[in-house]
Image (cartoon, rainbow, N blue to C red; front, side):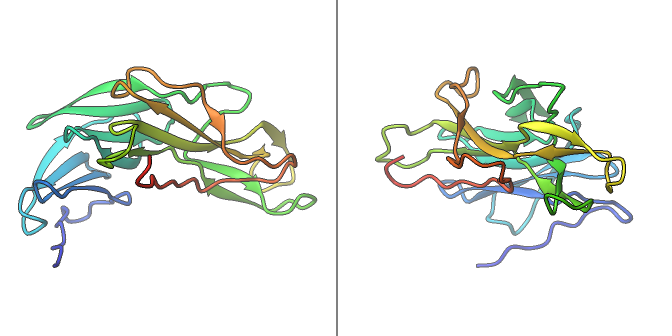
Length: 212
């Protein structure tokens, strides 16, 4: 098969589009944040044509999208604080749900965050922290319908006046949490990596197997 390009407006800056696919209806959903507006693109014919629906997230970048078992589209915000649960496409309407990511000001969350390249150097780089949202759609899974979020966050914040960025994260760890009621409430976050060092873990991603 093939997927046609979605044509954006001339001169429009586009964030990396996030895509979800519903195989039961051959529908594609693309959420894209741009310099002009935010938009939800929907194709009901496998990508041969798209309809653009404009909206505003109010929270910046979208880091990931996923479809629930009932066809509900979920989108995670880069602020880490909100999950969009779409209830309508035309016009795009959504519930704004709180995620389990805490908002400790001493170790603020951001979908991109500075970390040190070397423990004793001044070089730093931006790392991706998520959140990633995914849903369990497996027919045989005991947790079918469950929504997961996976993210990375710093354990503490350091400062280096000689560094490329004044503040940077120390000891990034990967966490996950799940919801069995469509994002209304969440389980207690659990750290995924089991190291006892101050090594960094970031660029979170996850996959759900057939057993859930």
